Image 1: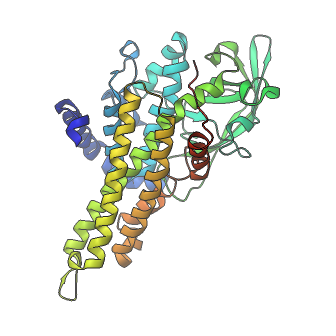
Image 2 (image 1 turned 90 degrees about the vertical axis):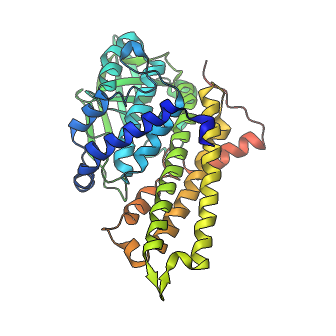
Length: 388
């Protein structure tokens, strides 16, 4: 099946990235998981190798490669068993940088995108609010135009990279009376007076920093507006398909890793005079989970192929995230169970994977919201068209 989507060049890229992660990242994971802070040097090494510029234009130092290189990037990040490290990397490259790529003008790309590709600057995307959650249109953060500047007030929460980033892509209401038709997107330097970030303590994704961010009379120049004023909601919706696909690919990749680890454990573990991999109840559980993951993976690849061709894949990407993250949680639960008491021990990898996996059905749109989006498409005939 993989030959449908991957070439020898893809395979070479995968092997190269695996080697990089094993040599440069894995030795530091335990430290970062404990400290909750990823050292800056690895961002620069990732940048030097071109891993942040996979889908960025060559004009600004990127590689401008098609989407299946991104799929490989995501899959291999999951296989080092640190959801936090993986999230920090892809949130920078595919949340913050996606908006710079698509809505940023030349000056903004020179100032923020180019150093993002090299790993010299770290970005985050600020949409979710303490009282808004998945209700993007109900955000309360405002951006009021005053002469040659905007005045930003409000707060954001659950922001990956929000503590240690250098810049933020921020959604705010420029026309509060117009609901979701009055949202705009801005790029804001983290050192701007009035910006403050508070680190949140999370169940999983321990290596990454997650923040609640406050904007208290933050003054930014007019040129920090990205794209057109009041068109921000369309920009956000346009990129949600990619974010959901990212979460889906993450889910099938960590599920595969968990199952491979568990199968090897079962082969090595003996009980009642034989390997526990010979017990039918356990064998059939693994078989069922493998089948479900394979179906998710196949659908995720098909969705990636559609996005790669430029098709509008909101329904498919939403379905992919909803289903793949649900299956991944099931896999994490069952694999931990199959390891018995060892699954509950921090010295074994399944406890961390179990915690990290639980964010899948929450981040990037909760499963409850995704079901309603799918229902509106398949029952009500709603057509979520991209921003022009």
